[in-house]
Length: 113
Length: 111
Image (cartoon, rainbow over all chains, first blue to last red):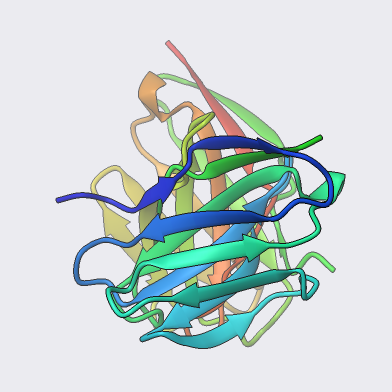
């Protein structure tokens, strides 16, 4: 069975640009969460979606947005990129988003220059 | 405001011995906890979970203990193997929806 897949694995963007990151959850999983991990820190929660509805939002500016599609895949969008947005962006999927284990993809390494 | 803390940035253990990784949390509403292992340039790998209705959960060489009164959980790895060398994160949530992660403990298992 395929795990959580994220694309692209790496990308470099310029300040002020926009970026879209993509995530395909494990088959049968209906919840997708997004996390940002900067060097030396644990992942920080950005969004959670379940059945295409936003279930939670972390303490991130409105430049960050996300959505979930009918096939349960998800996109994370970041507008007006700042140098501080450089990080590893992780997607996690779980069956229900509640008391079920969350499985992570390999992440997308975003570098803003 | 760090709600989940892993106060030991690193830990070294001899192969075959027990590794004990600790995690403290501040929010008494947390009721579901996960442990992850992470290698460089990879996403976290799920290891084991525990809900607040239990105080212990085992899966092979991995055991997680939860002390709700102390707001403390620990991960025991017995016996430790060189392949266990990685960064370990604990994560806590309320109803399993939004996870708060610690800063991680880097485990080195010495052959």
